[in-house]
Structures are given as structure tokens and as C-alpha cells.
Image 1 (spheres, rainbow, N blue to C red):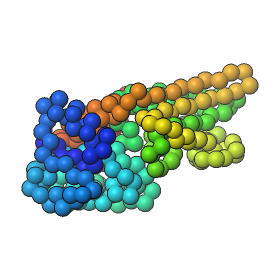
Image 2 (image 1 turned 60 degrees about the horizontal axis):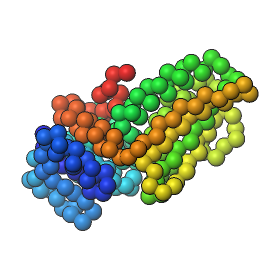
Image 3 (image 1 turned 180 degrees about the vertical axis):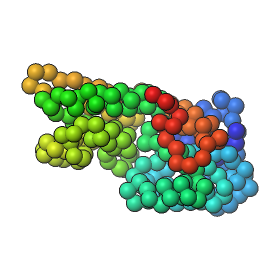
Image 4 (image 1 turned 120 degrees about the vertical axis):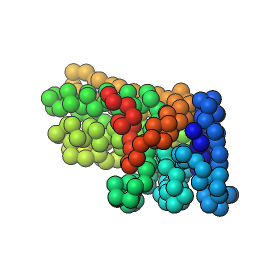
Length: 238
């Protein structure tokens, strides 16, 4: 498979290594200093572009890739609120393809399935209040993390006593999400169900970015043969 990389930071370099180890070809690498390469024949030859950049750049990158006829896999977060409707329309009505995930880790996909199932159970036990904490490296600009938002939306969907999620709240009708930015932490997500009697805690703690990079390459392999707005739940049937 021919892969283009959009963004060549730590994640981009790790994705490159894993893609090559799985027998794929990197045909184009686009970073901030060579944006003109979106128009190159090399980029246009890609089956899929894997995009990990900043929240403010992601949507524009999707448009440039789609204009070149290239499908996109993206792990960039922070753009959905402003551009989510346009992306959904492009994928549903204009034949564009985006595989988007707030987190590509296989472990997080499993954790997410556990989170959803646990929330359904805990809906029956109102004595437990639920809250979430996410910790990431100091370079992460957006908060809460896209993964935390995805997990929180699962909880709100399945627990009737929570109307929505919020940061910095003491109102029990909201699921509170706390964020911490520390060192070079790849990502820790913790969900706690606390009662007077006991506490139930589930945590996903990433050792490195390797799991995210492998998941992104697996998503690219899946995206090559699929169309539309795709997610982890399309690739993994838990």
C-alpha cells in the first residue's frame, strides 16, 4: 500500500517505521515547510494519507488531501466542534473518506468497549457517582483529550443521571472531566465510580506512542478498501 504522511513529528516518524515494517511504501511526507507537496504527483499516488497535526490545521489538511483524491486517516483532535458538520457532509454526500479516531490504540479500543459495558451496568446503581481524569504530555494543546470526550460521551449515553460532561464542575448532573499536563506522558485515562461503600476504577495507561502508531497503520489498511466516515468501531467489532 502507498501511504502519505501529513505531519512528521514523533508520531509521524513512528508511523513511518511501523508502516515500512509491514511492507508499505511511504510515497510522500508533508510537514509545515512543504505544503505545496499536496499538489505533487507523489502525494496523489497515495492510497491513504495518515494525518497527525495540530487542531487548527487538521480540517484544512483533510480538504487538501481530498482535493488530491486521497483518503485520510487522522488522529488529530480539537477540530470536531467547528468542522464536524462539514466533514460528515463530505463523507456522506460527496464521496470523501475519513477514518477518524481520538485514539488509535488497540488497548484503548478494548478499554472503550469495557467503559461502555460498565456504564450500562452502573446505570442501575445510582449510589455511585462517576468522574474522569486524563493526563497527557505538556505539548498537548487541547483539553479534555479527544479520547476522554469519546469515553465521556459513552458514559453519558448510558447513565441516565448524567446529562452531559463538563470540566471544572461540582454539579452532579454532569460527568466531571479533570485534565493534567505533565512531562512526556503519552496518555492516561482513568474512570472512577465512587460510593460511600467502595470505589471502582478502570484505567488505560499508555507506555509509549507505539500502540497509537500501529493502530493508525491498521486503520490505513482498513481505509484503503472502505469509504465514508469511518471509526474504530467499524474496524474492531467488540
